[in-house]
Amino acid sequence: MTTTSPVRPSSRPPRLHRLPDFRRLWIGDTVSQAGTAVTALALPLVAIGPLHASPFQAGLLVTCEFLGFLLLGLPAGAWVDRMRRRRVMIVGDLGRAVLLASLPVAAWLGVLTLPQLYGVAFGLSVCTAFFDIAYQSHLPELVDDERLVEANVALEASRTVTAAGGPGAGGALVAAVTAPVALAVDAVSHLVSALLLSRIRRPDPRPVRAAGAGLREEIAEGLRFVARDRLLRALTLAATISNACGTIGASMLLVLLAGELGMSPFLCGLVFTAEALGGFLGSLLVTRVAARLGEGRAMIASVVVSGVLWLLAVPFFHADARYAVACLLQGLGWTAFMTFKISTVSLRQRLTPAPLLGRVNATFRFLAWGSMPLGALAGGLVGQYASVRAALWAGAVGELLAVVPLLVATRGRRALDI
Image 1 (cartoon, rainbow, N blue to C red):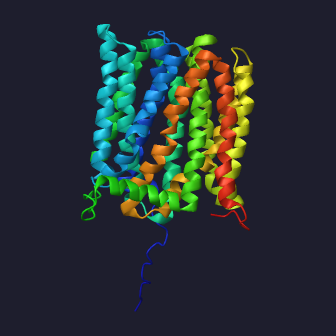
Image 2 (image 1 turned 90 degrees about the horizontal axis):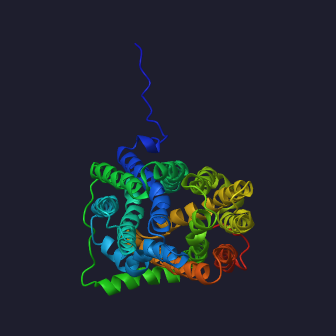
Image 3 (image 1 turned 30 degrees about the vertical axis):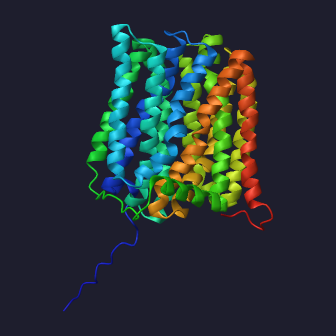
């Protein structure tokens, strides 16, 4: 008589792409980000080209692109914690599709204006504020804690891959069909994202709300949690400084390239492609760098090295062979910066209780992303009344200050491991 050995269940969990719900989120976000990469180039080119925006007006457009995070970031987190998060994401995608579709329609009718561009940019920032807070709060419901870093790396890698081809393809698309029509591509991408999100099967129950809790109290609870936690406080301050200063220069980059240097849309897109390729490479190295240096040291090194590389890139932005060096340095800067960017998201998700995650994400977005419209406004003012290149220098120098909160948070500790 023979017996068969019992089949041992595999101890290895399935790969992320084999989890149907995560796969739908992953693909939907990837498609949406591909369209957004086109818009990142096309939207300012509409202002600089057909609408002849001045440096200050171009900076004001970038301000509107992030203003939603400043005005609605905090209440958005409290609202998201009260609502079905996947439904918030779907509505956000549909809203962005409608807003973007209005631009080619207005251009076709000959009524496209800068105020409409500002209004659409602000509307996109509001929809994105709700979508991103809900997305970062919903992800831990689709994967377990041990795989959060892996899931964030996968999502960020996809974003950088699509961003790599997006600006270059966007530049060619703008040259072929004009910038307003190219924005229709992003509108379609958000519709595809909404469709895929609607097919996620994991239950999406309405969160249980604490009895008697008002909006103000819920917002304050999220703020207190971030303020009292040493690590979350340092990460938020570092990201706020980095985003504010980075946007000072970024808001004027296309004004320099397309406006003052007269470079083609395709060449303008190459710097964004280089940044995205660098970001993709950096996303693949995050776990190795963190394992080698420890998470704390890795984030400090990430901020310092990226800041130095971006500072070195500024003098190479010219309409000749030096532009290739600038693109290379910008790309390498993003390779270095991805360790800080991805580790920050994963730490925030691990350190925050699920009922508070929306509000903590909103607090982070309010400060870190809410600083970006202020940085863009400052960049527009510097570009208008000093010079566009002075704005790039100011932003690059300011980026280096982002390491200060991280150094303060780890001062006096024997190890920098987090």
